Length: 78
Image 1 (cartoon, helix red, strand yellow):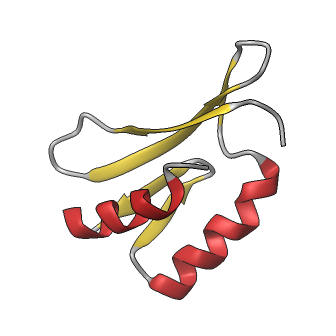
Image 2 (image 1 turned 180 degrees about the horizontal axis):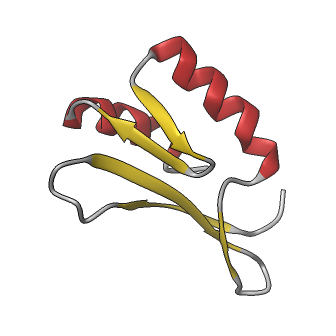
């Protein structure tokens, strides 16, 4: 694993609970989307826990704030 910084950026749309995955590479470039090594793990976990739905390659939408909190507890430190 490299020294990339992985971030979840929340949408400013007040009508949706949506987060977008972004990470910054070791070289300092912002790369949009999920790192390939995390993709399968996150999708498996989301399907098992049914807390969100994926709407784009790097976006997840949640029904309730508690679902977003549950998701971030698991994946914010990746």
